[in-house]
Length: 241
Image 1 (tube, one colour):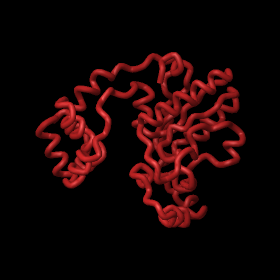
Image 2 (cartoon, one colour; image 1 turned 180 degrees about the horizontal axis):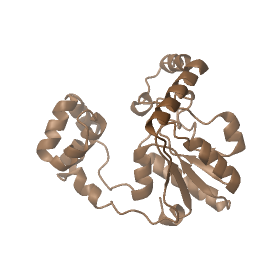
Image 3 (cartoon, one colour; image 1 turned 180 degrees about the vertical axis):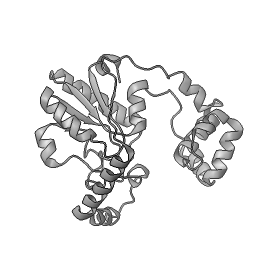
Image 4 (spheres, helix red, strand yellow; image 1 turned 60 degrees about the horizontal axis):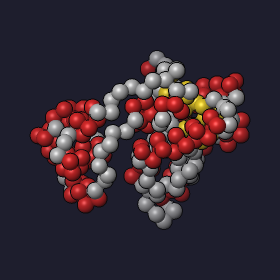
């Protein structure tokens, strides 16, 4: 996101069930602003209950952006989200309204604050080759060639392990080296607002949320998604409310 655009943005983030959506809604109403969702699952249509998506009533109260914009079988990269968020931000600001970005997807937040490194595009054939290995084998391969990145990645994080190995194979340079070139924090008027609660209270809120989801028909929603005749994208399949 262009620093000129980003300078006027208020970011609200934090763990699941910390109250991000509620606070963003209240602030947007008070300030006359609009909300850009920073949730990698809220972008998908038909995934309403399991993603704790803002209700239709809440979206009537305050305009929300980047919600229900893709089908569950479509992929959405961080770069796609950042480009879409930038466009939404410009649109809101051009209409003279405050922008509130709310959500808890860590990679989206990092991209918003630091931008994306100029690594190579994806290579499907190379990714297929890496996908033949177990996560443990991938981590060992990365450890041998890029120990710095391997030390930061969980041994079961296949997605990032494959990407790190892909960049290494395509460029001959570790992904950690690329990322160091784009690690400068962007200047902004307000630092991100991090919402949190004591762990016992947060866990209790999560448990209550799960119960509400089940009562609202979560299992039926999951069945509908799997019966639509097309496989879910990798990103959509990882959804968790």
